[in-house]
Length: 469
Image (cartoon, rainbow, N blue to C red):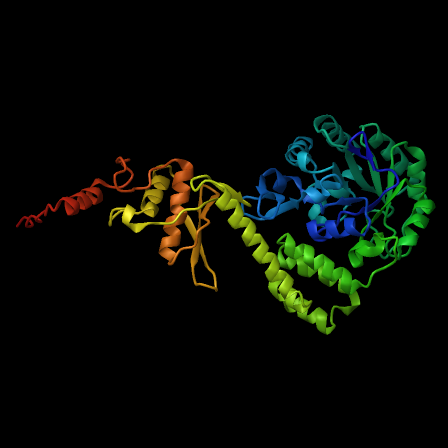
């Protein structure tokens, strides 16, 4: 599967890119059951180009986080050598920007040229590219020469076999490593039969590996069918979408595994890697298929959190144990670092800091300093988000300043103290004075408040002058 340290696409079975399905839990599950390669869901270049790469030391993942704090793409070491990042793009330069952002964390880059859905085609992406061969060539050449990992693409077939063959021969000349072919026309849907003869013509027309896709409904129902589909298309490899979505054990040569067990294994990964509850619920409902209105199905549909989903499957103990393990890891990370040494928890910068009121003048607080600094820098006002844990009613606050987040790893006895601790973390990371007693005057807080404190300390009493008559 690896050729000279690079991912090979010959003689493989792959998990197809599927929107909302191909997130980390499903990809890991497919690998466990025998998939050789896994594709992530299509991710749009414009959104990915705005992301920040964040090493999540708690989850032990690499996250690509959007400005609105959504994790657009999450990956981990277990899949690094076998995950293909698929993007939706219609712009060579933007495609290269995104590819360079993720190339150190994935095994290959794929361009979606087959999705017929409006959200993809309206921007000239997906299947819309099939009518613009020059743009296809420009995008692929830019990527092939610009990144260190293999580049592939996934297409649909054109109205005639001759047109399809001409297109794939042009694509091959760009230097890509492999080509996935969904054997349906742009206007066809899963209910339509797959055109194996078109895929076969493509496989015979090029020398690079061809990956056959589109056989889930009528041709691939079990693991043994994968080889039959490969032979019918003459392809090097096979890619499975819906068959794997319904039951990922289709990749296993040991025979199908009851879907209830597959769902439990999926849910364990979703809990372990803090998958978004709505995405978890969506994938589980796809696996339930016609059982979605069963008692289990209704319980899953009603669930709003991973805790509630866990309860539906009797995995609440696993959920609690996982949360405890993650907390231990957090505590270990913070205790092993110097108290004044910041560490990253996802996209949040954290330090082990408590707010000690006696260290600050009565009229001065770190929040005040942070607010004044933000105004001076013409930034938006700091935004505090505070949570309270149930076991001891303690508080922890996260402050967002200039689109970056800061938090103390230590919990406080009150919401106000938690916010002050978060402000201190932000100020110390940015190297800004925080207003402690004895600190040199930074000019951030008005002189009147500092003078008032000085007078109280020295015992000086300032008599208010009578108002002028």
